[in-house]
Image (tube, rainbow over all chains, first blue to last red; front, side):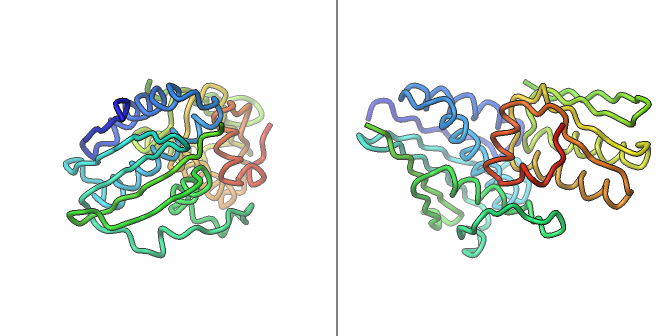
Length: 141
Length: 102
């Protein structure tokens, strides 16, 4: 599709603000409501944050690839890296309940937010090592 | 848009006023400000989040860490006037009931 967006950025937290602006603008161009747009921007930011923090262990010299793609019935987002693969148990969906403060494990919160925002989430090993996460958002008629 | 953090002292405790975007890049700065204020806070630490236009899970984790540390120091930790962006993420994370919000 001619409106697809593909970009490769360094794994530098400084760039997250620019990534959010781009994703926001692209999602808005599909007339997605404001609240859902905000949730999607957050979830994509979380996917990039995981790549930086966990896959590249905070190094800024890795690369993160983002693909934003539209189908008739859904928007599809992909974030991939070539860093350390994410352990499968970290990618699992867990119920988010109001927790006791002492039990809070905020480290895994990003992935749970991603599961909560999107209709479908798939974690795969990347083509050349690393991680690839595909996230789908249904478009209402 | 960056992050601004202002510290204020009043008779009923300390207040940190936060504005801008809290993400992986800026949350360490907020973490430092909160953890530094807690031992000095007199009875309570309030975090004013009215000017926060964006917060991610690293920002939320920072607030959770602040809450924990405040409990250890036996002071209250209150979120003041959270912006819609903050409310939305706290609700999404089901953490809105964990914090005292004013």
